Length: 251
Length: 251
DNA sequence: CGCCAGGTTGACACTTTTCAAGCCGCGTGG
DNA sequence: CCACGCGGCTTGAAAAGTGTCAACCTGGCG
Image 1: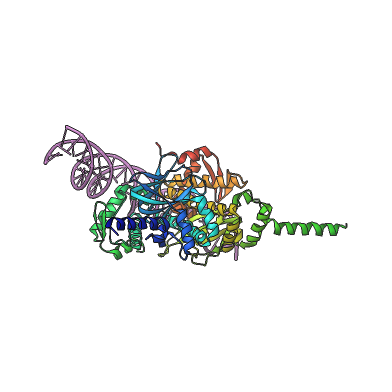
Image 2: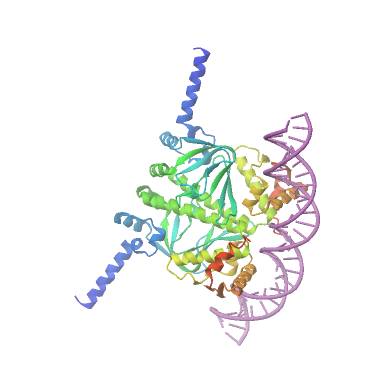
């Protein structure tokens, strides 16, 4: 076998594997797939999610008002979700990273409720909703998993309501950094140093604060020896101290 | 036929109807049921939700941490949902009235995420989750409807995030009153006068405000000729004016 | 009848926003 | 290569909004 043939064969093998067992091989599978599926079920699943889509930084995966027909699993990259009010005011309602699901807000009314904007070049798996419905009638593990995903989104939003409703500025920002840290850790990245993908303004919008307030909190955390910040790069120096920031209200 | 026999027969008829077609006859059906179900499907549904439960004012339908095994449809009454943080701080995350669904937050982690507390004597239909799963595999209209319910809860919470994140006190309270008004209207009650079921403090908790701030806003709305308030009774005098309160920020 | 939770109102304190100025880093075009 | 522009960020000072504390009122219920 010549080197050319070998290379071609390996290449073919890779492509087949990618098409036939993408979900099974995906390193995010435990984040977005139910556990305990049979091989046959995995095959069906791969068939379901076989449409990939690349989204350039700044572009929208979908926009509010567009017809809803699919949900999306983030394969790589980073998104913000943004709701705009009638009067033009808007708010960032969430940030999504690899293994997380986007678009479930659209099922209820048949159109998307928010914009999903890529904050860096990103990659998603498209999951057509009607096929997901069909398949989850056959694969009960998938049905349950999908319900769990939606339920967790409800619980996540309750957490944000708590953030917005009862925490003060510095607590919100500490909670936000710790949440990011924990999610990055779950994906195999360092929980102690990372790049923020969003601007201060986007962070502020999510946290119900002005960008200046976010900036001031960062400066204060730096002065208190909790973090180092350089533009979008953050290093957590004293994670326990950061955790105490939002237990601090108990004087 | 004697009068006694007639009465007995009517009574029997009523009982049967209540057992066999409770959902079909429920005046809230268009609020919590999918449209276009066949009679056979309605029968299955009635079988599913045949457990009623009465909750006295102040009692919990469920509490955070309890095993999740069912969702609930409110038949009559009024509930608040409340999340408590590790450190003891809590927040009201929603209010539920007839035809609305409670408990979907529990699916994700298998335990309830919040307390559901009756603010008046209430009545719910219990919908065991595993049976709902089974049935929604057979009745695709039910499956889709259930997904819509969860999705709408996600969208509702996004709306609350907007409230908490970008609106100022008076806007939040105006939006809250208008939301209540609209939901009562959809249930056949007067949209212009109603009794608040919650205290100022509970309203404040939901809106991320202190009870004094809520009270002051009520007084201001009264002085501005927008509403009349007497304790928990509210009459909306100038609904357009109220709507302009939260468009007001556009100076 | 008296108690007490719930509500209102005032004065003041504190947090966050607003407005303004200036800095930094990066990409673009001359 | 450098100058320039610009978005993004930081910092300060003053203003606005909301919270805190305290006093008092009210109505319902035991």
